[in-house]
Length: 142
Image (cartoon, rainbow, N blue to C red; front, side):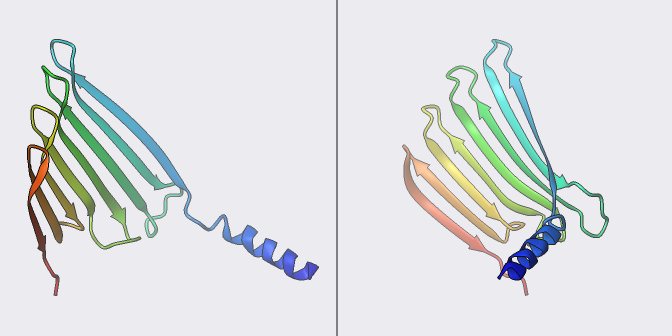
């Protein structure tokens, strides 16, 4: 029994350094209007492999852009995008992208979601904050 426990601990110790170690960075950029109100916030989160290996390189980027109104300070638009470089995971470059636009009262006007290089697109339109129209478009690769 003791031999099996030591053997399992040895295997775990060998396999842990072989897993991908990532470097993570987070950058926040804020832009302001002339009157001092917040105009735009950009948050970029990047994770890359720590060891540089040309055959096993991986980079994933998450970008969030929020645009604000100059007078009311409410959100006008929110964009979220996830992209990746490397051979791991799905074959596409742009994994996920969504754009949400808001009206003057801060209610949703339109939501557009795209997945895997526009192979799946979903568009939702709102009127006074209530869902009115949904369109789903899928392209199949042959």
